[in-house]
Image (cartoon, rainbow, N blue to C red; front, top):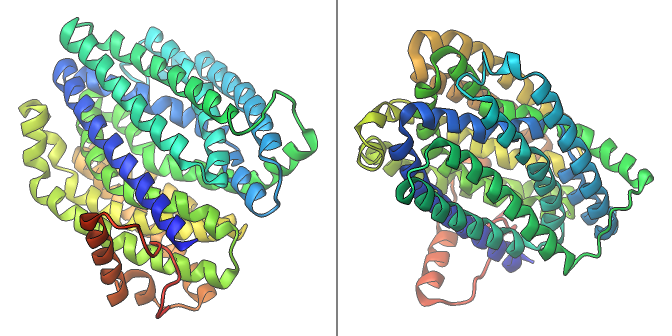
Length: 448
């Protein structure tokens, strides 16, 4: 089990690294060809569907993992329910956003034209369906389907970007169309690949759906809160400062979000394992994963802090130099959020999402409040400072709940141990000699 966990984590993380690198290349082309103004508008087209989807996720993805691993519910039934629910809710929320376009386009979506909004909303039901079905894949351990599709779709986006912006010089319209096309491709691939393993249908099991929504309601508030915590600053910057400043901030955030690929990969693979473990094992796995994730994230943040501003101007051009200003604050926030991500998996796996909510809501309120003050006063650097403070607050609150219940010390969670360095050294040696992977990243190893 430990070897399988380590293999899955490294496989998912490796795929996300490739996906991130490809995304960076695509981002460089988009920034240079669109310029700050249009790049900021494209950022709104990118984040709007994920925000709309978050309001109707209802925790179904987390419920799918829980019911498959804890309750042993059929993956076929859960998949069928997920497809019907995703398409219904996705179309509903897309319609509501379209109905409120006059207000949105003059405030938090400033600069986004109606045609771009229409193309953007096409992606909403598709992204929601992707989210729900990924929960099923996560539960049954089929990460290869997800990682392969993720990398291939990013290659497709890069190729289309080169053709549209470099070869044919089509501009913003083509960039928005590409987002919709890649989403359609993603879902088509996913449905075909899953059909080979899961005999899903379009039948709705109402009794099971009630159970999914009952469990998911707890995760829903947590997921919504976390998304707003991550993205509220984008909309406030758009409203206060306009698309160009949003382009600078989103570029700086993109660099630091690469750091969050580490805890996201660990947490994604860790959650199904935790959901099927005893409370004692859950706490040990969580503490170990926190230490190792924080160590790796911290080491990766050092070159970003040193070379980040230089790389931004080298890759994206001098016009995007302001994107380097918020990097130090965003890096500090990423370190705190990485611990928050792992700890939240502990509470979710034990059906105690209320603890995550208790940590997330104060952090969100402080984030919005600080942004309302700090963005007008300090621009995008103020937004980054607000992000760092709110992420740190969320992390501290979770630690206050976690430490007594887990009966571990703060050092057990945050300070790397000798075995952690040995673990990474072992991974490096196996990588160089191409030996078979050994102990798991989150295994309850000796000395714990």
